[in-house]
Structure formats: C-alpha cells, structure tokens
Amino acid sequence: MTKHHRAGAPAAVLVALLTAGALTAGALTAGASPAATASPDPHPGTDQGARSTITPYGSFGAPRNVRVSARDNGMYIYATPVCSGWRSCRSWVRIPTFGIDRRDVDTTNGILVPWPSSWREGETISSGYVHSYGRDLFGNGWYSTATTSLGSITRPYAVRPITARVTSQDDGARSASVTGTATPNASIRRNGTVVATANTSGAWSAVIRGLDEGRNTLTFQQYVDNTYQDQTSVDVVFSPRQLLTGINGTTTTLPAGSTTTVFIQLRAAAEITTPGADARVTFTAPAGTTFPSDLTTVRGQQRPATGGDWTDFPADNLVDGSVSADGRSVVFRWAPGNAGWKLTAGQEVRFGVPVQNPGIAADTGELRMSVTGSAPQGSLAASATTPVRIEAGTLSPVTRTGPDTVAPGTTNTFTGTATPGATYQVVDAAGEVIVPGGPFDVDDRGDWSFTAEVPAGATDYAFAIRQTAFGQTETSQLFRVPADTRN
Image (spheres, rainbow, N blue to C red):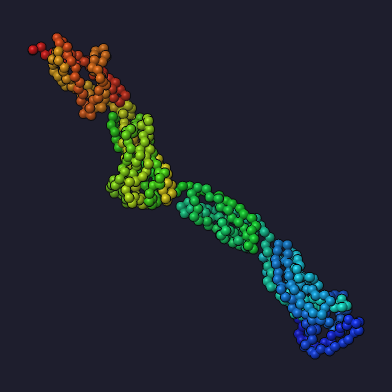
C-alpha cells in the first residue's frame, strides 16, 4: 500500500545529468536533502527493486491553493503542486473512502472527478488529500510525502423543483400556513426574504402574515448555494373581515294610516374607529309601505356590550338621505357628526326609521338594512332585518254633527266625523260633486267640515260625504238638513 508520509529521511545522493551530458554525483547530508520530501511512485507494474536504488532528482512541497467546488455532476478539485528539479510538476488526488485515485493530473485549473455512485447526496467526507507529483528525466514518477487535505466535501443534492400549497389560513389574523418541497437544504425566499429552509428530505413550511383582504398571490423562490433555481406561486383568499353583524329585531306593528318608527340593529364584532368615506346604509321598506319623502337624517342610538338602556348619539349618524321615487328605499351616508366617535367590540347600535303604512291591506313583511363600505379596521358589510305586521285600515262611519238647520240665502258651515286621515268630497244624491275645491282632508281626530251656500227659499240642504282611505272609497248616507223657517 502506498504511503504518503515518510517517518524520517535517510541521507540521499542526488544524481543529476549536467547540461554537457556528463553524469556527476554530489552528496547531501541526511535530513537536509530535498530528497527527504520525495517517494517513488509505487504504481503496479513498476520495477520496485530497481526504483528503490534510484535517488530523487529534486524536491517537493505540499500542494498549495487546494480547494474543492462541489457540483451536481461531480467535484472540481483545484491545487497548485509544489515541485523543484523535476521534469514535470502535477498532482496526485486521493480519496481512499471511495477509491478515488487520480495521479499525475493537472489540477492548476481544476479537474472534474465524478461522484461515485456509493457517495450519497448530502454525505460529507473529510478523508481526501493531494500530493505534489513529478517525473524525473527518465520518466519515473515521484510524489511528495507531505500532503494537503481536501477538507470536508459534501455531495450536493440534485436540484428538485420547488412546490408549494396552502395548508391552512387564519382569516382573523390574515395569515396563511404554506408547505412544500424543494431541494434539500435549499433557501426558500419570498420578496427577497428567507422564509424557510428545506430540510434534508426537501420539505419546508412557512407562516406568511400581514396579508390583505381578498386574493393574495404568494410567490416563493428556491435558492441553492445562494443561486436562484426556480419559483412557484399559490393564492390565498381572505373574505372581508366582518366588523359588524346584523341583529334581527322583534316584530313591530304598523297601524293602518300611520307612520311608525321601526328600529333595526347592529353589533360591532371588533373596534371601529370611524366609518370610511365610502360607508353607506340603505333601508328597504316592507312591501306596501313607504318612507317619508323628506327623510334625510337619522340620529341613531347606542348601548354597551353589557346591555342596558339605549342612548342617542350626540349627533346625526346617517346623513344626506335620498329617498327613491317610489318611496320604497332610502340611502344614507354614514358619517357621524360627533368627534371621537368609536364603537368597541360587542357594542350595539340601532337606527330608527319612519315607515308609512297606508293600511291598504293586512300583511307581514320586514324592514331591511344593508351596510356597505369600509372602516380603517376592515369591511363594514353587514345586513339586518326587523319583521313587521302591517295592519289594514277600515273606514270609519261618516257622521254629521252640525248644523241642525240651515239658513237659506246664506253660507252655512257643515261638520261631522269620518276616518282620520281620509280624503273626502261633498256630493249629491247622484254622486255629483256639489262643493268644489276638494278632495278635502279629514284631520287626525277624524273631524271634517265644509261651507256651502244654501239657496234662498230652499226648504233643506241635502249632501253625502264620499271618503277615501286605505285604498277604499265609500259614500255615506244622504244627509238632509232642514231649513230654519222660523224667520
């Protein structure tokens, strides 16, 4: 077995061929001879008996500038051999663990040594070394007894494509857990920042935080030995964060022919510092009802998360109301007028809007509220409903309360009662209008009145009241008021 270190060097004689062709011998003292650094190449097939009597012609030193560059296809070994007095000066590379034995090779610019199949990916070996290697004038090979270690050499993993998938997401925290595979020990980066390192099996995982509402495309790059290899992308979608939740209210009765305030309620799921400029609140009236055409603001009320009494906001919360032409919907801008407005988690808010019931038909329905827009903390999107019971109106009987008699040839005033809020006309027995200027209104107490001139010589004045309310029209009995004939 070739040995690469010699324990002690005997005195040697340096034999040199002079330029004139004569052979001259010179003696060197033991331990000082350059020959102390050289051993003959023990290649199989050489005449070891003859070689052992040959005195080396020069000297060696341990190779310098030794380095190894591990690549996918093998290792590139670089070394500068140190030789003096030899016909050639090259290197001898040895890695005994895997039987690698490359002698008389030029390593100055590197040589490629393929990976042995037994050298596993990721395996590290530290048993390699390099001799300086030279040949004498006769072509005999010699090598340095001093060596330089190749250091630790790790066979790199073959590059594998990067993969990624979203395994879970936290909508509240706006974060996503991503796992994937890549080249073992590869650096996984996102936007230039390392987010994970693949393990020796190639698996990697990362938690990505601070993502946005909606669709997020996450791109991950794979770097092996600080060299970009490839990349892959995954999408994660976050639904808008629900800052508000609707609370369905209790049933509210809408009496016929009246305007009733109906409340509808929300609860803050998180702190809301202020509605954004795009915040809008839309109300839709129950079928068969309407909103007043002049509805432009709503104050609103609040109460703490622990419950308790409702208190008015210091200023209108819903402003710039716009009622639709049919009166069925109204849209407000949510812009609190009081400084320091804020809702805390769990706090409740409600809005009361006036709903007009003409009383045409009895029915059930619901007042609907829809909130759109945003706040600094997220989306304000929410909806709520309050059920209603719509009462149908019935016409009240028409009565006459005065006068008891009429004065012919003068203007007389007639009074009576009918359905509050109804309209009416004064007609004769044939249904013809006899008092122009109508229809007139029955007041909220149900009272009506009109004036009419009774012709001179008339013995009475006859009329009927035709009232309209709740989508119904009815004509009363014919009232006949006798003339006062005492004068």
